[in-house]
Length: 203
Image 1 (tube, rainbow, N blue to C red):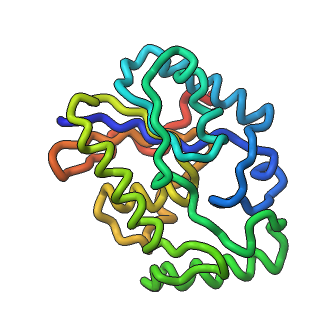
Image 2: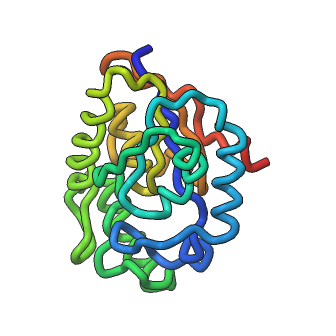
């Protein structure tokens, strides 16, 4: 095994709680629940000897791994780990109109149209391009054997498809509660899921 990747979603934000669409263009803070989730994750995994912590450029990921950053773990932000941009829907409530629009775009993605996007937003194909760049940065650091990656729900689903070679149409097969953990064992170009949707730290 060349690397062990601990991939987590950020903690809850107030917009998550309210059902407001976030995306790459909304730079929201964790709420009290999110900070408690982050603290619980840190308490369980603080003794793991992470060689590096990677996050997106959005502060909800920074705040989720703040315990590790404050403890002195090396930290790097990669824009390739940012959430998918939902364009015109960002900041809007998840009402009937939004649900209909999201249902429509999900149907396109599940049918293999990975170039489909909302106005002003990103497609899965565009997100994968920048995720491949982020992955190359992570892979190139040969001395980093144990890595913590904090990112976002939709982006994480796409990233897991990229790693495991699954078609992007299967992105919904990866549950993504706040601070859920996917542990990935990387050997060469092979990525094996060692822990799937692990939320034991929240129990």
